[in-house]
Length: 258
Image (tube, rainbow, N blue to C red):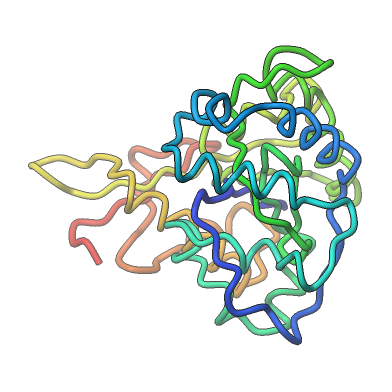
């Protein structure tokens, strides 16, 4: 069973992750090709392409210029420790044990516009490139066309030893669209997180993102390898509601916000 997460826009490279094992990304040539395309664009073009402020555009233009195909402790950090958004606050990887991180390395994947798929301990250089970006490359007009079937093929290879391969999608639809479902040979289970507000249950974006990270943490710490294990998720007041769930769409609800 493999758990998929979205990346985060917010990054944290201080302090360096000293003493934590690292691996290298799987798609460095593809990342380099995308960087070369991005380097051809002006700060104004980057700002328009990604709807960024001038300051953020300048920051990311500098990141593209600094990016190198050689990953080192000075220019990189383990992906699961570098991402710093709502999902990663829920995951709280810096408090996971070395054994937990080792398990996560083979059971968690982070989808990425620049890197395709990152394993938790893959070194990552800072970047901003959302999967939904309409970036023209020699493969087509957007990143979905650029990545094509590559991500799904990689996931198939990761799950090849599983008799009944399962993907647990904790990523946004923007990112999961990069997984070619025609190529993917695994069952996909979606997890939905709802809070009771205004007299009804609804998805509250901030809480749902955090809950995705919490679910990943729960899976890592409990070494979940079968879908049935997902039903036990109970962090921060959530519980699976079987009345509104389906076999491949599990709905977790809570009445009191944590």
